[in-house]
Length: 233
Image 1 (spheres, rainbow, N blue to C red):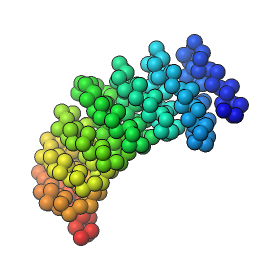
Image 2: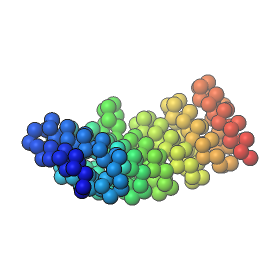
Image 3: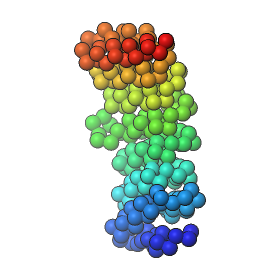
Image 4: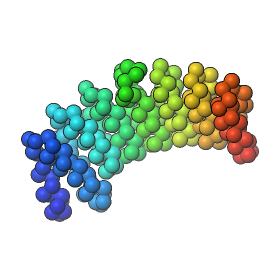
């Protein structure tokens, strides 16, 4: 590592003062985002020991940093953090994996899709798993989202609909079909949007049904999505 400032700032990572360590972590992150590929990997290596730091706020800032740096080597570090006892660390792990955007993260996200946080908690880890899978956009993530379609938390189901639309594969349509009768209007609305985004003719029949939804907002969005999809054929 030839960057002298990087070497100097990295000394703060070993400080016994958590605030000094956090300061170094954030400063290194800002430096790293502008580095070349090889030097980004060197910074990721510096952060690796902090993945098991005793302070939760250090650990979640490591996850944030790895997401910002977005180097694939960060996936291995984030994998170590997937079992963290704090939900505010785990949801940031999911977000960071999505920002890195590499399909190698999907097995870790699948593990996180089983997270057992309770409904009403402010950190719905499974919802961020869905968001991350949508960001990655690889069809291997569909099987994970298929399981989350029936999640008990409507926030998760909403993000699943969005993620399926982001992936955009025709196989996503069959799982969006399961969300058409969701009890929550905004889930049904985002289902309609996702069907149009996918742009496959198999979605027409489902949009025709959603266009007659009892909720006027959902019906309006579905009608607009239906017209958009029809225009493609």
